[in-house]
Image 1: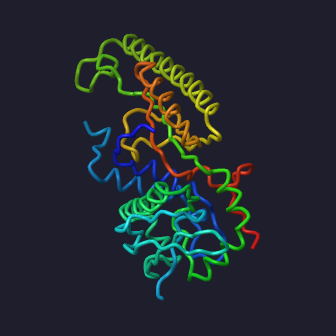
Image 2: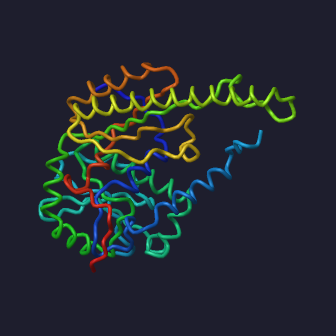
Image 3: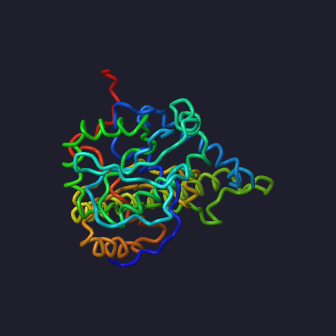
Length: 60
Length: 264
């Protein structure tokens, strides 16, 4: 197989898979991510990433 | 033994050793828990961070989420190098080893079926973006500068809209064609929601965010197919990620149970 250049994996690509993919287990577990409001996580992540160095698109 | 058990993946027994310095989500090296002929890959995590309440709060903290996701991925990645793991949803945490064993017994048939389906396969991610940066001349006149006539302005806006629509139509066509072609070479395909540009930091608008389950031995060909479309249409960008463990194909093949129905 060709060696794919090892760029750092983008967090969004990772979260697409880790928060929405993978086998969902029920039973003796502490919390099911499937039950967590992902929109809220997304929104909070979004807010903090805007607060970081992303300039406002309306600022210039 | 203190702490909770964080389970990354389930896999068939494998001969090779994991990299020695590999650490899991809370810095603890992952261990292999063998039960009923399957392996659960497990590490210890502190209850203070992974109890239901703590976890719920942590999940809204982007830094924590990022660090945990990367640590999780690192373990899955190491497993992918030596076997075909069946990844579990992030933050699947049990009280103790016996809880993990009970789960493995309950899901044994599912696990074996899914492991067989995924065997020797990896996931590739393909995203299509429309570059939305407007040409300098197509931008509305900045405030302060004398506007041309209202009619001129409307004409400019119309042309701009038409150019955008044209670009969208092209992107949609390319994305549809690409998805069909790639699906025909893949054993399975699934679509993720388009990514929010603010979250991804990527330029342009994400119109296709797909994942493909591809045999390792045809992966090179698959990557070449994606590569060939890359420069097909100006203003449209195609991005490839992977190879990933088959995260997006770990659920049951037929029904993608999105509803977390609480029937007790």
